[in-house]
Length: 178
Image (cartoon, rainbow, N blue to C red; front, side, top):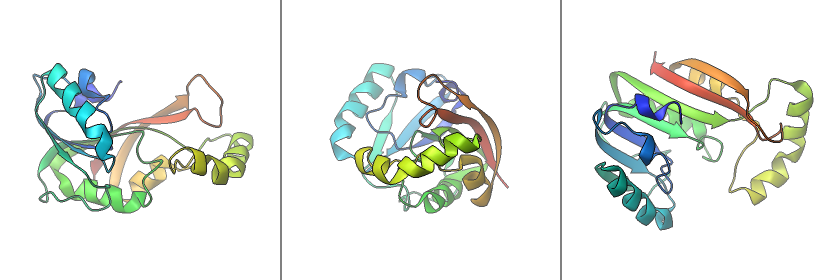
């Protein structure tokens, strides 16, 4: 994972799930990880992975639209493969921004809206069915536009990863608050 090693200080990981990112954090740069995820069944595995990685972790069993943390309390916010399934991504991004310290950064890696009109047409057609079978995942979310609308200045890289094009257009990078 390209973005995770850039995390530092006190980290808020939105959509921590089972803690798959744990091995990619640089222990020497991270003080604490606060993980937010409504999937309580996944928390046990996230704790196990954090122990294996030698990282201190606290878990919050809620969705990201309302995160019970103090304003400006995190140096880094991490969001990987989460924005596609959050019911209100704008509210979640505004919460992430609120939780970031001045000068903090949002590290992200997400799949989303293809720039290819033909692929986007199929993403849009399949969306109602895909959402039903993939935990609410939205194939055609415009990640850069969402970041900008939420008050971030994103530095975005993007490309198709191997796999079906309707599922494989990815965005990743860093964003700072405007």
